[in-house]
Amino acid sequence: MLQQCLWRLTSGETVPSLPRLEGERHTEVCVIGGGITGLSCALHLQEYGIKALLLEAAELAEGGSGRNVGLVNAGMWLPPEDICQRLGKDLGDRANQQLAEAPALVFDLIERYRIQCDARRQGTLHLAHNAAGVRSLEQRHAQFQRQGAPVELFQGADAAQLTGSERIPAVLLDRRAGVINPYAYTLGLARAAMAGGAQLYCRSPVISLQREASGWRVQTPTGSVLADQVVLASNAYTEGEWTELTRHFFAGYYYQVASAPLSGAAADAILPGGQGAWDTRKVLSSICRDTDGRLILGSLGSGEHKPVSWLRCWAQRIQRHYFPDLPEVEWQLHWSGRMGFTPDHVMRLFSPAPGLLAASGYNGRGNTTGTLVGKGFAQWLAEGSDRGLPLPLSQPVAISARQLRSVAYEAGFSLYHAGQCLKVLI
Image (cartoon, rainbow, N blue to C red):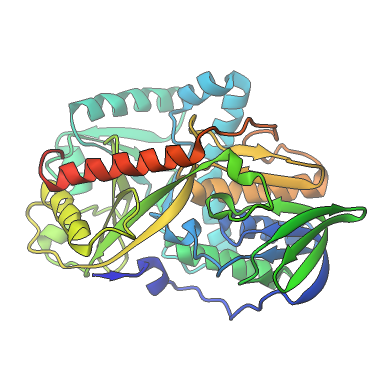
């Protein structure tokens, strides 16, 4: 089994080799980070007629934007009424409404710019893995119904037909959502931004960010940018001491394992509607199929330093539990990505200093949230209005014990998965 990202290997989008920043450049807005948030911001700035220059430390889509599960989900991780309890009704309603519409924004951009990312808009499935999971989905369904969302609950034979598994007693279908190849989607945003005039530079890590009389100087090892305003969009892949962004999230990881293309009646029964899915486990598992028929399983945690035998054992355990009728599955690829977590599962949108905008802590909802926040930042820079953002800019309190939280989460995930491999947990 090779350590390679399936989404990169099967991407329908490419971009030409991009240069490293050399010398000094001037621009209205410098965007730091070549993932979905940064590229959405650069693209929408071009639509406003604002010059944007984007710096990426590595290559486009190499971070979490290109390595995630590919779910285009509505809302935050929390159910809508829980969000209102946490944020207050006014802010909660605002966040719920805008993030409910975020999948439509993603699919509109895909259609408008003809992004070749295997987009499927048949919804997503939240799977109950046991009786407690059924109760959780029933509570979520009731909340979504009170919100007027097009979300349906299926149980028994109907749930089995939607999933291809007799082990899933209930399913919550969200028709607003869908799936994409996230690597291809990210490159498609880059292509559209460049076509509009944005300047993109790769292999250009930021090493310092300093205020100057005319704006901000963003320094890289081989060049610098003078910008009126700066957007910090590096999120979980932020590195270095040049920014305080890292104080507002702690890093988490997600790994995925992909099979060879599957065929036959047992394979065809798995997720026949083309939806992506995830279950109600505390340490969740995700289940998807790609357009070539591969089965893709994933879970919280990093797979980069785990033996291939361990990853294969885990994938076989999940596959045989949910889909025991499949013949022997050949697991071909595995990869991991990093995400920004917050203790309260709420993103951070803030302005660390005049002329700086920052976002962090999407808690695994980056495809939709990143697209929406990038557009909202562009609107803020163009109009001075935050009405396009799911939450107003605030001054959040730094997260304490970030590294300890990351280590504790990773240890807990690994222990849970070990229990699954040993058949202690399922």
